[in-house]
Amino acid sequence: MTSKRRPVLLADRDGTLIRDVPYLSRIDDVALLPGVGEAIARLNRAGVPVAIVTNQSGVARGYFPEEFVLETQVRIMELLDDAGARVDAFYYCPHLEPDERTRRDPGSVPHLLRSCDCRKPAPGLLLRALSDLSGDPAQSAIVGDADRDMRAGEAAGCGWGYRIVPEGETAAQGPRVTLVRSFFDAVELYLKRSEGKGSLER
Ligand SMILES: [Mg+2]
Ligand SMILES: [Zn+2]
Image (tube, rainbow, N blue to C red):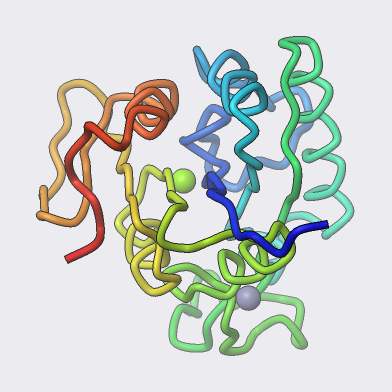
């Protein structure tokens, strides 16, 4: 075994890999977005490990149990398997920051209502994935559909950030983030990264 560090692709889940359903809580609502299976299969063939990193504060809010998050992951892996693709690791944050609680949505699982190092934009999930998969942050990428995904990637030292912005919508384009239309487009750019632009590196 070598201790050589390698590139890892870190992917947000909702709105990035699967259809964004706010606080997804029915397994039948799990659907891969177009091109996701093919894109992950390409990463598999390129030898780039793929890890899902997802905020699931619906657990702390009491919308669904942690078991549902795991059940959803099993479903995602089945759908990917149908496309000949696989993800290598899965990480989620079940917490809710105290200052995010509202009167209407105060949260209902007391031990999860706390500050943590894993709710994006904190980098905890990404750092765990990079550590477990022997990832070199500078060669690794985060793909997500939210600013907090990009901030987590920056905090984890990711060399590349790809922010998905749907057609007809806009996002602040910074020098450290590449805007893309889909996960598929992000992967295509990442696999060609030596010629690409938009590195998070200064
Ligand atoms: Mg998302
Ligand atoms: Zn957390």
